[in-house]
Length: 250
Length: 120
Image (cartoon, rainbow over the protein chains, first blue to last red):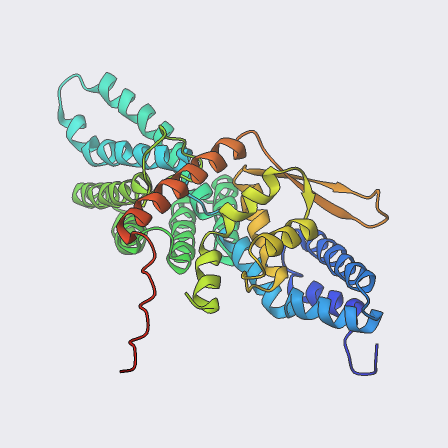
């Protein structure tokens, strides 16, 4: 290679710098190395000189920054595809919306302990399915998702020290995750905003007080958010959906 | 359709194209991309390095699997279709063929070229 022309070794060093923050950076660089050297081998076998082959291989592969950004976008989005499971998680979110929104009504009914228990169990199961579905649909949330995870874990541990922090921590984690989801732009922003309403707007009313209307309002708004998000996830065609033959998917 | 428009159309179906190439048998990334270039007649105008995130996405979705192979002297990642990927590919292939049939039905056969008017 002539002076000034980057070599494959230089390129791989640049690519490593571009993907340094990703967990599979080593694999990305190894795969790029294999591709580039395979390209050089093929071009040299076709009659090119090694210098020409390296130049052509690097030009075809793309600038390190371009490739690095493509990996970064995929990493931040994770799998981010709609599947049969994410559609079912959308249904679970709609059921959860009904459970959350009607929880206060059920409590007013006489002899409601059994129904209330059943609804709580249903809500917990649906919530776990919804969380898993959102994680699969969204993939990772980048730095916002990592911050939300650390805040949530920290607030869980703080229950042994100051129990008041756990509600603040959970609310903050929800806000951080919500901002990540808004930036990703995959699920409807109004649904995300409705789910963040409770932590952002109602938290000051909840801390240190027991206002029934605050809980009811929070439940109704959260229910609307879950329903909206669930409907959006349910409606998406699944990548792994196998339907009867002959149906045209436009 | 000019080359630019054709390339953009192909990019939108990249996942399907990659599944179809890997369906023929396990291949490493370079071989997948070379086969893709060959089958599209070089119409897919993408930096080759940006195809790898799509392969990783398909693996994360459970439609492809990969393993590292060091028999060639280099660390090489080989992709293969999973048991789930096969039916999905067939479904997408049927969808595309049905769609093409519907569109062709509307467009009809290519128009005959008009003969030039005779000079009198």
